Length: 162
Image 1 (cartoon, rainbow, N blue to C red):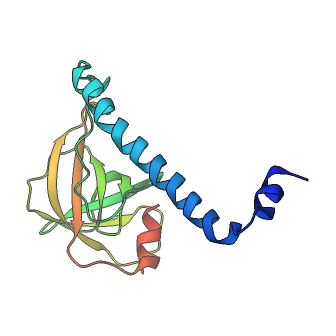
Image 2 (cartoon, one colour; image 1 turned 180 degrees about the vertical axis):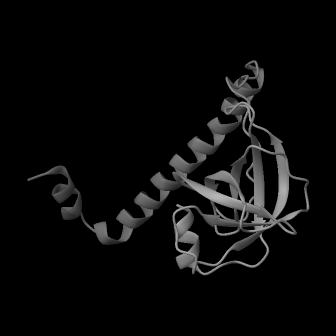
């Protein structure tokens, strides 16, 4: 017979056993909370730990970036002819816009129209507003241009950009 079965065989075990279990639980909680201030004192005496790397600033975009294959696009600045557009590349895209690599600088606030190079003429141009433009660190003589959709195109059109 095990020790637990022997304890259950004692007289009036169903009365005093729950009280004993309760007392043991309370004693354990008291012992654990009593040692917590000691641990806090030890932690306060320890020198502060310096992080190995500084944390990156939180990404402020509302939608996640979706990277994929680089897609070559035609870019026409509003007011220019669509028959002779310039060429650029889509670096990454999101539901709110895309980041382009262009060989020319574009003023922030300008509206451009883009369309993938290898699509039929029936595919509509997508209007983007330039939100940022800076020289590329990775690609010399190019500019990284952050764009936001003027009006979100259908998802089927967005998929054409990679």
